[in-house]
Length: 179
Figure (cartoon, rainbow, N blue to C red):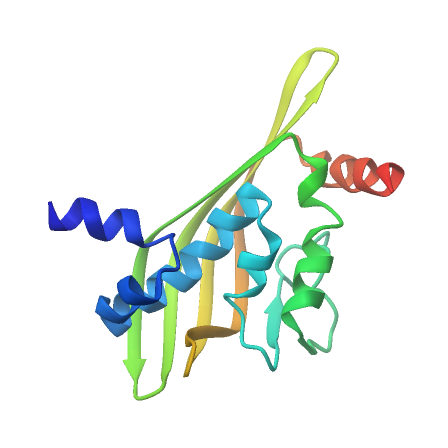
């Protein structure tokens, strides 16, 4: 029963539940919440996983990302991170970010993680549905704050793509024409 309760509380953000989690569980919760809440379109919850002073996004392994691909990687405020992702993710009919096989190292008030990512993106078209899958790994750095562990650095390392590699551009066009 404890495992069921813990799994159910991971995404609730309940302060009482949060206090009962170990630092490692809180770190994993923060990185997993990014994909979970992005898939749900709950952008305030996505932003809440990042450090309020900002975080660096590094998507240089995937040149077509909406942020984090320039030679200089500035620190972005949580609202700027969400705004960048909102230029593409809402253009899909569905997304599913599956993060797993995580490794967590905690050193005082900082943590680093490595995890696998399998992100499925689906867009409907006249023939049915088209899919693009991003396969790779994430590296995160987090800092412990009064509000829990917050992401200060996020690197996505693209290892392979499956499906229609033009789907991100189509999703971006969909978002820009809907505005």
